[in-house]
Length: 390
Ligand SMILES: [Zn+2]
Image (cartoon, rainbow, N blue to C red; front, top):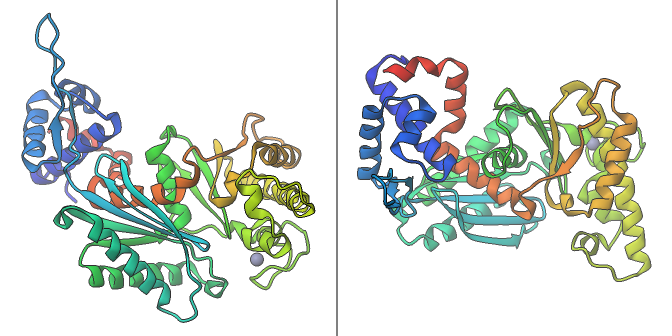
């Protein structure tokens, strides 16, 4: 890409303006000019184009008694939609998001058991098709992102390359069937992207993100980039000696993954929903969850020694466990963490709650089909300031 090419520069600045409006929620032309260091004439041209495209709209002018107040701009609610599907091992969530990021429809259903290859893709295709039917104007659908957890144990062992091929084959097949652009990515990477988009995560922080659900996956954000390699964190040997589905022994998953806990207790769901029947099953589930929390703390300490993150965030179904389990996790983490790890580094729960999965898919769709924020950040790293005076 030649940055100095006027067409390329205009395209990039258009995206920067669009991203800035989305991130600020509302911004005047003067705000944009100041934030992006682009002159007012260029900003006005870009905004005019975005208004004509229907991407942004002028919100009501706040008329002050003294002088003219600038007109705030925001992403138009009628600009279009993106579709999001988070196909997890236990549940599949699906939703429709407006381009300003608002999730306007959200539903969850149990993921069926698949017996033959291709059934999962067929199931996701049907889910996407049903979403397209719920959009008032399907022509305004910009694209669909599918988050896939490679959690079926038959997917293991699979190399990163095999997974990437699997994702792009699934995307192609779903896209051809429903007639809209589709992107498929790993669930945990999308969840981390969702955390960046929808919570107040400082952009420059490095994050170790753990998806704790039926399986345990992790992703790393460092220098504003999400590592493209899917972490094998769940199969880190923590020395428990327990057999894992992957065929090894002592993996974190065998002590803490949803599949392992469900094999040993019938009261896991009760625990996750904050209910207490007072039964022996319940106290057994608490004991198991406490030991799972210690295992998570141990594994997180091992990862932190290598990655030295600013934050460790946990999302996924089991992240809903109550605070007492986070205390256990952090206690173990504190005991096991390497000496150089800051004492302020704690493991915390996602701010996005049970929507972390679907918001992750929505973020992936918004990013891929509309805002291209990851590409813009990469350009920033490459010296986008060159563009500011074009
Ligand atoms: Zn394993």
